[in-house]
Image 1 (tube, helix red, strand yellow):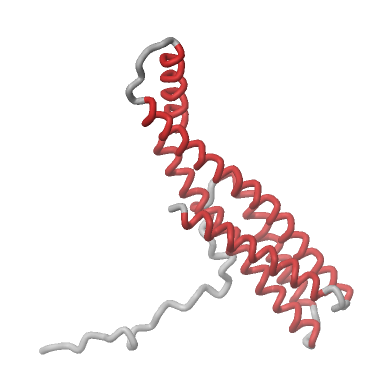
Image 2 (cartoon, helix red, strand yellow):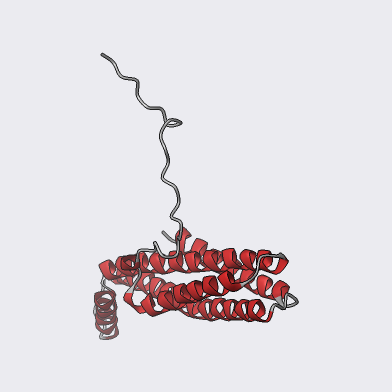
Length: 194
């Protein structure tokens, strides 16, 4: 007997996790970013606790929009952290210490008047490694600033929720949108490198 193969339309796609922030795989994040990840995920959890205390109505609806922006910010930060971790692995495979040592040794030999036939190749390797190290360092610096801005916006939103003052929601939403835009740009820039 032949059995009918299930078509892709018959198959159930897995539903996204109910709480995408709690389902983040910390093992993919470089150790130097774990505290940062903990800080932003804890901030998002605190935000949800504050939001749960707000009475249904227009303020609560506007705060839910901020909530989705905060979650998106945490997820973008996580994606950047993971990408930097991948870049760390590539850099480690290139053995930056060896690249620097080989390049410096060749320069010393060249300064002593010796012919260094492989100098162009050593210089190219050294330059590539240095550029990658600079990209990772810049990404780490940007993440630090964006983390602070995300945490500040979440705190401002929580303050507005507690005081039931929706006048500052627009600027807080704009701050979060800017953080999301910059995180997305950073993630895309790091992705295009690979």
